[in-house]
Every structure is written in structure tokens, then in C-alpha cells.
Length: 121
Image 1 (tube, helix red, strand yellow):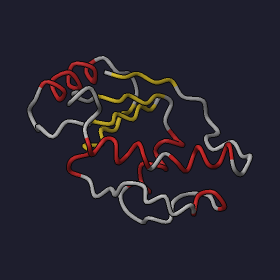
Image 2: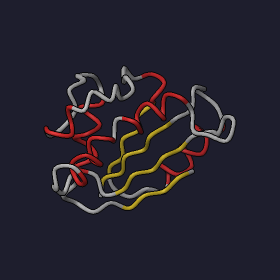
Image 3: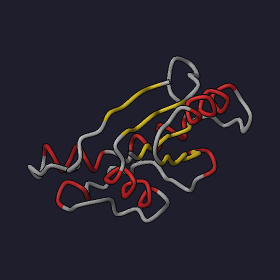
């Protein structure tokens, strides 16, 4: 079992990281933590490349996350809420998931072959 954990906190030792630490002590299988504030991930540019093509035209660390999304069984999003919203860098990652929406609703494809379980903390 593989779990992808998206950490949206800008603080290296904050409450969100403490929560992730507790969660990872109880996870069976492999897990990968993506610290979005320390990744080179640009937001979606709405270039509409993904309406016609598989993937995203922006070549950055999000390409690696796309690969892990395909492999993993679980996705956990952990983030503080600022002004009733996820943090900015986590929203950048979320905007890049547009490629999956376009695959399903514009190209009529199943973007993720393996079903996922998800949690939001």
C-alpha cells in the first residue's frame, strides 16, 4: 500500500507536520510526503494544453507527483487553513490537477487507472 501525503504548511516544525508525524507512525506500507512549500511547482496557467493532450505542458516537480498519484492507493492532504482556505502552494498543486478534469470531461478518458482513498486533515 502506497500513500501520498501533500503537506501544505509553510512551517517546517508546525502543527501540520506534527499531525503528519503521528499519522505516518500508523501507516502501513510506503508513504511519500510532498512538502509543497519546498517544491518547484508552478500554478496552472490555463494554457489549455491538457484539453487536447495527456499531462501538463509545465515541466517542473509536479511531473513526479503525477507519477506517484498513478501509483498510490491513498492521498492525504494536510494543511493549515488561512482565511478559510488551503495554503497558496497547496492551491498551486491543486490547480495542476486540472489535467485529470480535462482528461475525463474534455477527452473522455479515465485519467487515473487505480482507485484512490483520500483524507483531508
